[in-house]
Amino acid sequence: MAPQFFAGSKENSSAEKVLKVDVGSGNGEIAYSSDEEVEDVELRGPKSFAVSDSGDFFILDTIGHQIEVYDQNGKSEQTIDLPEDEEFFDIEIDENDNIFVLSDLGHVLQFKDGELENDFQVAVNQNRFEISGLFFNKNNEIVVRLLDDTELSLNKGKSLLKEEPTFEVKSIDDNTVELITADQKIEVSYDYAPVETSLLKSTEEGEQLIVEKEALIGEGLYVETRVGRYQDGEQIGTALAIPTKDTYYTSIPFKFLYVTKDGKAYQMITKKNSVEIYELPFTEEKKTNIDKQLLNKIQPEDKRNIAFFDEEKAEIRSSQSKAQANDWYTALQRAEKMTYLSWDYNPKKMKTPSTKNTTPPDHLAKGTETVEEQGIPYNWGGYDGVDTSNSSGDNFKDSISKGDKAGNVNTNLDYRSSGTAGIDCSGFISSAYELGDKYGTSNLTKKFKKTSWRNFQAGDIGLRKGHVWMLESVKKGSDNPKGFYTYEATTDGTGDKAKSYYRSWDDAQSYSPYSIIE
Image (cartoon, rainbow, N blue to C red; front, side, top):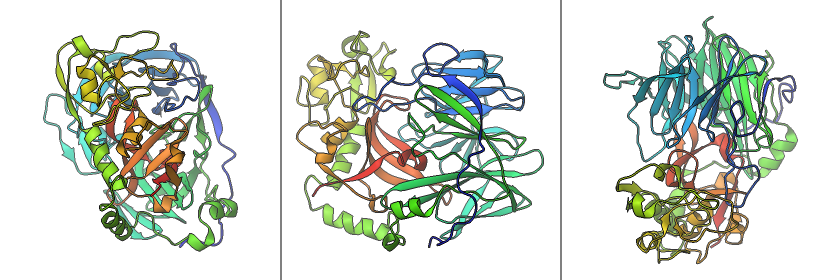
């Protein structure tokens, strides 16, 4: 139960801006996927950043397929190009200034002095996003951490070892979790629902830096993020992150917090015309941005004890809805079919040309031989599902067999470019729910009604201007509700297509929950 008092000071107004980088497309700048909000286009920017012990900044320019390096004064020092047919979403550096970048397919590249030094491939599920990112393990080695908190080591030329996690998280009660490392146990207390507790880094002085996320879950969703500093199991400081709900112009970066070995905490914010990094001060006093007004807005007093994603409620809804045609359960099945649809891609016949109005999806741009593909490709304005279409045929496969090209990620036109087949985000939802026509993100509200996050269930949708996704399930770590597994058609991640994907709690709060009107 949430407390009726508010300890600590409100707001973190003393964060210091330490870097500002212009948005653009050249070296030394950071690219966004678009310079304006467009119907059914998810506005995206950099996914991750790192800070060296010497104070240099490394930003992973996801859209530009580059690593941008800046010195302490914000001067561009280096640009490193990355492969364009795969999306790298996390970056880390070691004490020897080796740079590591990680793709959602488990591909890791290591750079030294701007040159490719090593190439690793860790064994992960290629069909479902399951990676938390790059971290240092208990032996101070860089590893790939999975969403369930297990870790995969990088061993070039050897078998890839699956290691025990550097930490384990256990729930003690509704508001307290225990984080266990090799040499200590740390109790982390929350006022509201704990939604993620993870070890970020151990400092040279033996301190543990822990990301602590708690959420108000109700009519809306608000996630508060802090970095807790602990020594010998006792909390000695807290850095409160700048609120993310209404701050970001693009989607919230996958890793927007970073801590260094000397115990400094940083946060990256993507604004309309710039990417900014702030240093977050640590204080002994626990700060919060949650006040009574925000609490009452998201959790009205008469609804504060209703459980989120209650399994019993989900089972009741499931048994009721399976009997109904065109409901959320059927939509889940149809979304899964579009996500895992197998089809043969012949680039000589099906490759989308690069023109003013058409651009092939990244994963289909470079191949020269016929290959088996999985998932309907992303097509701006597209509505081509397993049995729906707004192109040449009756469905996606029929359309490409009749000569349409496979996908188009170009958004220059206000409508689907003729001669292309595939599906975009709102077309995916429209097809899954058999709405009879393609609805855009601006008018899906005619078919769906606003619901609350506490009632958000599998088959419901997260909707905002520019993008929409369907909830498949809630993803848990060792004992953390980490985020949401989704079905969606997106250009985010490797493969511009319908896919099983992942949305963090931070990212989800920038959407609104909707349920089908029955």
